[in-house]
Image (cartoon, rainbow, N blue to C red; front, side, top):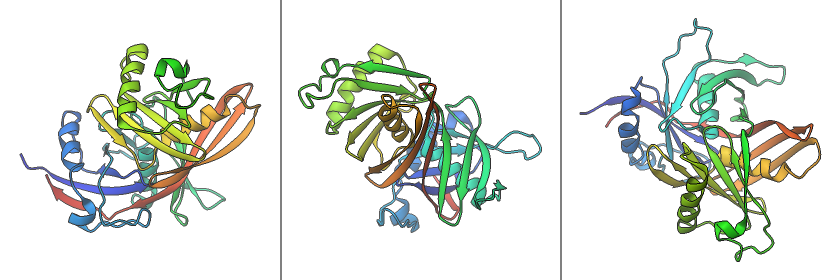
Length: 295
């Protein structure tokens, strides 16, 4: 059956995200997403972004914008295809609400503040959109659990003998394993993913954040649609990396910048009373025009 959809292609720091504006049943998410992720929006629809500057624009993930009643008192909402959590899609959604829907309350700094609901998180998130600088900062869920793994049990001890502990950061809706000074590969990801799933149960989404200095390679697996993606950038992976880097630090405010394959993200972590109190992610967002499409 052919479907007519209105979509926007978003570029939140290189993590290309397709926003489906047409109301869609949850039962249709997977079928629609699988078709949209096969389309080259650069070559077929002329979409262009400043970074990365490429003729080829392929989606890495799909989110579905839910119908919104301004009189309900509830914030606008969106679902990821696998109902997981995604920080970059959340940033893209908040940016869309401000730029295209004229949402948000103007702040003294010139940014606009709004609240959004996103899948994989049980409470509304706060976002600040800076239209002039084309950026969006979003509050990220604090870790609900942190699990330690030894490099030996993950089979990576020989690659980095100085690595003593690896942390799995559970962010409610997605969990990321942070590996430092370990080279990324699909074989390594699949092997470690299978081991972690055996130990930790059936997570909605799982990622490995490979860190080398300030360079980061994020790889994410989404259970319900059974896909693995080497992402252009990853907000939740950046959050996990920032949390992991702050665990052994005293109370205070810490800012990290991670360069990723197709963009960069800033993480601001506040630690108080020995715990991670708040996390914010900031970075570029670009939007295409609305595209009418048949799939």
